[in-house]
Length: 151
Image (cartoon, one colour):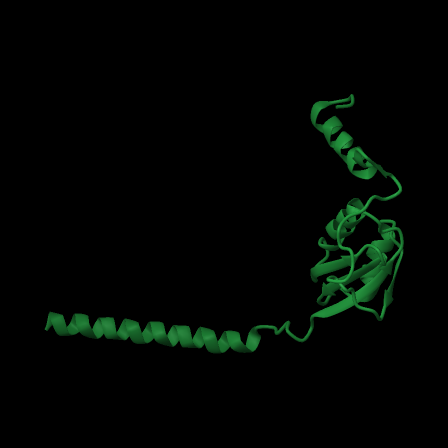
């Protein structure tokens, strides 16, 4: 009798587990948002974007925003393609870029990553020792970590 009772209990728990899994799948399938159709790519003409330091600043600020997915750049043409989802939209991207000193406007062209130069090149503040913006940020970090004075 106890073998049959144990067998019935295992069967009951299996049916209960399968039912729970099916209920979760059915409930979840109606509640999961589909992002496949909301991904948007917008291309911007960005003024003053000329080197890796500029791109680093832009990248760090944009990726703080909810909905940011990816970006591609063509430094020679000053084009930035941003892949984004709601709530991030074209106007908010232009606002963020303007706030950090890179005025931008959307354009209908797409960024040709393969044909364009995506490598960093010197900006007006760069010399043979590197980018002055990067050097200044390292000096500031050193000052914060080790007190006053230059490295």
